[in-house]
Amino acid sequence: MNKNFSTPHRRFNPLTGEWILVSPHRTQRPWQGKQEISAHQNKPKYDPDCYLCPGNVRANGEHNPAYTDTFVFENDFAALLKNIELQEMNETDFLKAEAVKGCCRVICFTPNHNQTLATMEVPAIKKVIDVWANEVDELGKEFKWVQVFENRGEIMGASNPHPHCQVWATSFLPNEIRKEEDNQKKYFEKNKSVLLKDYLEYELKARERIIVEHDEWVCLVPFWAVWPFETMVLPKRTIKRIIDLSEQEKVSLAEALKKLLVKYDNLFQTSFPYTMGFHFAPMDNEDYDHWQTHIHFYPPLLRSATVKKFMVGFEMLSEAQRDITPEIAAQRLRDLPEEHYLGIGK
Image (cartoon, rainbow, N blue to C red):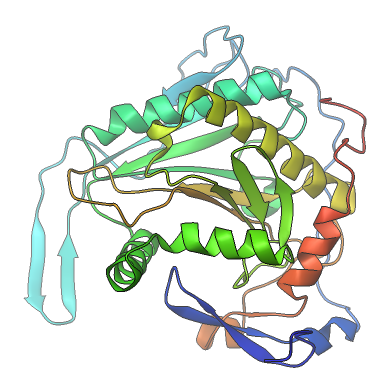
């Protein structure tokens, strides 16, 4: 393959076993498509109409406490429920269903309505990481999978602008986790080593797609990235789960996330939208020596603060496709300053 990757080619994702079409020559095409309205960024520190601000009443009538750092509560409109009777439906090869149990929680990062992880200080981000680990530890004692994720920004479907994320615990392994489980296991059985550990070692030598290298963590654009400025955050040592992080690794992760998210905001000088999520080994008692904890960031923005990539047409019906190469995306992010363009959250 041409090292410059200037002509159409496909890239393989070893985590999912799927391919992506890359078409670098299409970056020159004119854009007359959809442009989103950029959200107004001058939000107040406290919003009396916000369901998540301290002391306010949520949609179900409950009052939030006057919390001062993080706040966790059971989702008022949970997609999964704990107390149901498990049933199955298996009438034919094409009519199958099963009941599932689960738990959904919301984590408010901070009482300040006008902050994001990018503008919070490192010690405050460290507190959020502590809560993530605590929630995973607690829910993992009851459920096989625990998904920590954040939808940031209206463009990503966030129903509330207050800085928060969600934790969903399930009695089953979701589709994306099943794919990563199967492919990491196959790689481990073949090579007697951990896929993402080996991949990171390669990237640290190549240094083409690395954005931020910190003491214990590396932020990079994966070779097989689908979204224009998609990134992955990886630890330098093999870590099965977020609950296995040392205190120093949590601090280092907070610092690495801060640097990455400030660069995201600086890219188009906007509060950068994304979906972020942790992937780590399932929480049952099986052997998961093939797993490596990692964090996915999937941002939709393509050309500016108001132009996003759409997964439609060929991508919905055939295969994911991107124009800007991961190498160019990584270079653009890497070259951005680590001080927020608004001069906040230093």
